[in-house]
Image (cartoon, rainbow, N blue to C red; front, side, top):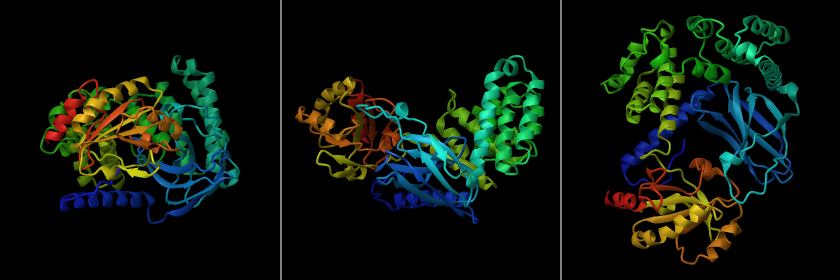
Length: 481
């Protein structure tokens, strides 16, 4: 969870921070469980010495929000070791900077991997969401972690089957062909006893059942959901769940699609009202499962015109308080954080970056003044145009607001040399360094990106207007508060 490191001046702010921290820790401990075992990932990443490697897990497979479990700096010879406690088999994310790969990990497992060298081009600037690659991982001790081998083998068979028989399945609805393939899978993996793997295969096949219309909606629900456990940590279960219940409340369900959800969400207890309405659908008779479908609906409402964000957040907050199910409590918290991240009033992610003197500067060092933060590169002409326009604004507001420019040039010297030619730029210039963490934290997908932050470190506007179109008015309104 991104937590602002700005100093908090009031007792209320300290209490609020502590409450959020306690909630986060309790949710992490809830996931770890009392029977957590040490899990170790070791290996080599040739050519990546000095870079950070991290292992994370998704806080939920609905939002894909991630929580780091451990990170370390890769040694000069490429070796690394990651260690953390887990209680359940889960789909881990192994990442080097913004390059990622999936690895299935079991409690107490010891996995050794080899990561192929990255084929990175000599880019002038960093675009983590464009330049990201999939890490190529090989298990050097597959027998000690058979679930990865089994899933990899199954996925290869599945992908080949879909590629060769796409039209027969998705257009001709050839159910006999689908049954034949299912029998083949059962013969090959019939001796596999790992429940995580068996459910992974089951729900991946369920997606094909749905696409091939191998049964009515009610039949699929009875087969895959009604009376079945909710597999929060299984990616294929959650992917099928989201596909099955996409627009379920507003379009698919005969009992629910004519409901006036906007009015219900504005009511005094929208959580209880929604749960009562959803209970009229027989597929949703299980309370825990019904809450999960409710949260899926809220996630869709947020992106639908006429559903204010605050109304949807209110449902999630009440659900956190009233639910009897710890996993749903964790998921509701996760979705709340996900939906408020980088929104007005949320904490601005902190950073520690080098300035022109190569001294570390953090966002909290600008406490007491609002901050205009922006990301730029020397090769971005629009960035340079905006910086020219900023000169008059900085002269007008320099004593009342901090101007902080973060360069995404890969080479620190590129920024340094450029600014020697631009002696009229007198702002706080920082460089991202060798890691894209700050770009990922601020979801920087293009340049320039401007963000307005208040003097307490909370986001006022993301993205903010550019200097050539409304930024001055936004700053004036901020200073009037």
